Image (cartoon, rainbow, N blue to C red):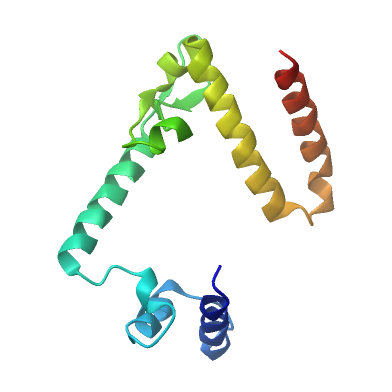
Length: 145
């Protein structure tokens, strides 16, 4: 991340009444064209509105869930694979992904990458170490196949 952006975020946080960083305050600060944050936003309202609607559509897709028959397991109906996001994007039915070996492997790869991000975020929480270790065992076992 650009050091100027980090510095500006910290400036905004320090100015905040509660010492926290709030999105509204970031947007307000970024309106100034002389800030490093300014270029991180879409200022054309038409483009921004369209991008926001796309984001809303993605959120809608993410919350579509169903109960798997003969179980009490609730799962997402659709999944986005990294391979698809590298092109035009899109969501596949989870049932199709789980029954296709190549797509299932892609899903596992994505899951392990997501887990590494989660692990970096929470690596200082010692109570989670057993989870990290268990996930690493599963990843090694999966790679051997």
